[in-house]
Image (cartoon, rainbow, N blue to C red; front, side, top):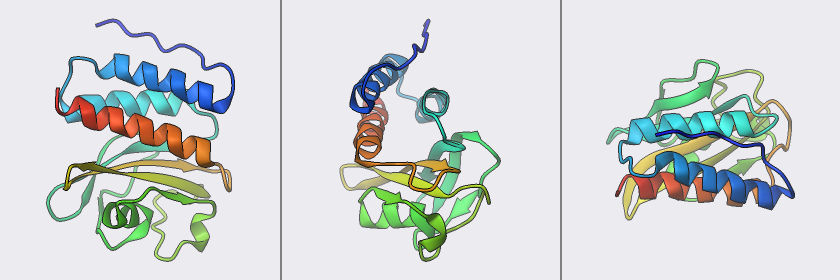
Length: 162
């Protein structure tokens, strides 16, 4: 397979549409969750400005365990009742946090992180994990980011079924 990421252009929504198409092309015909999580992490990390961590935490039946990512070394295990990742996993709702220091129970894996967005990954009723992005910029992620990242998360989940 040959894949080339192209520079994103236009409005933020248009850029996410382009990034979504790139993610689809990247995982097409591949169902391995580690391979797809690794490639999606790299794609998103290099495409989006002002992010310092992009990756996946995968559910092992008990807790979230760090999976493929781009950025500084990360916390290895996160209990479902801890932090932004645990909140996304247990509420089944994307968590968009403007100031992680104000989030009760925030886990500071990287002291430079100021804002975060975490998309829960469910295959039907089964928790697969979470898609996590951190930024050193306060209030970095908005509704357009959330919608775009949720679309990319769906592409990852759909790839597991191919």
